[in-house]
Length: 83
Image (cartoon, rainbow, N blue to C red):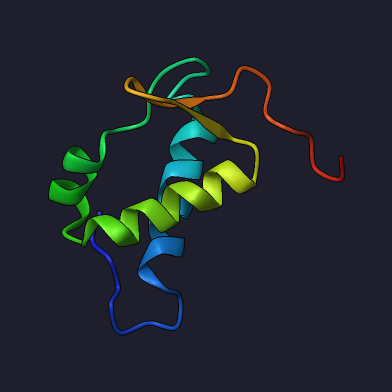
């Protein structure tokens, strides 16, 4: 996926939306790790701070959690809208 650096949506939001779509479609299943920062850095071509912001968006939405030393994983039961 390429990032639109000229558009009105910040790159970290674009990346969070892309990952959210992969989670929603089942491409990244519950309990599975999202790509590492190194892998996402290569895929999206952005700085790690940008990727950390994108992951924080997903954490704040309750879609992923981080296990220290292991990675960031999709939660088993994402929150339902409005809860």
